[in-house]
Image (cartoon, rainbow, N blue to C red):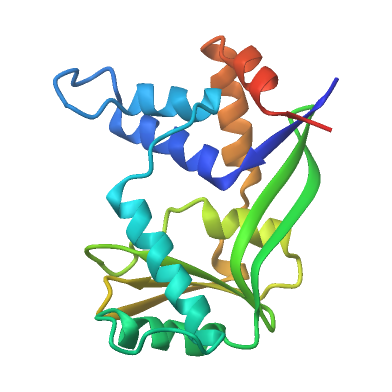
Length: 203
């Protein structure tokens, strides 16, 4: 038996597919199931404008921390607020951990925007924000599993002008294990386990 990579983004893509229920309404222009299959097959996907904006904003935060950002940029004030929260932390921290779920050996992997004194910070660029937007995200439960010493996880969401913090403490976060277990069961039920094992095998 091999070991397989497991990431928050893979789980998030699957849960989005389940939530949208692709079999109910075939008329929607977005097809969550085909999008999930691209993720599962690890097909290269084009960078969307939303993704480009997110990368640009994160880069600006890093530039501000390093003292080389353009203060005239319209996003500067918001990025500076985020930079102040992240300054002194470890940026783009990669972490992995071997776990076993339902008899399958998995390598849980994540890349943290910032790890600072027991707090994981994740930068989100978003057009709109509602309180509790990330409540059901698989990201903070996954990262709490990866970083045992982390006490809290804060999403810093910004649209380029405002910044909205959303914080979860470890004791408020559900375990990621049941989600992974459901995902593996679903892969078996839909005969997609082989695709997952082929594309996500790791050393």
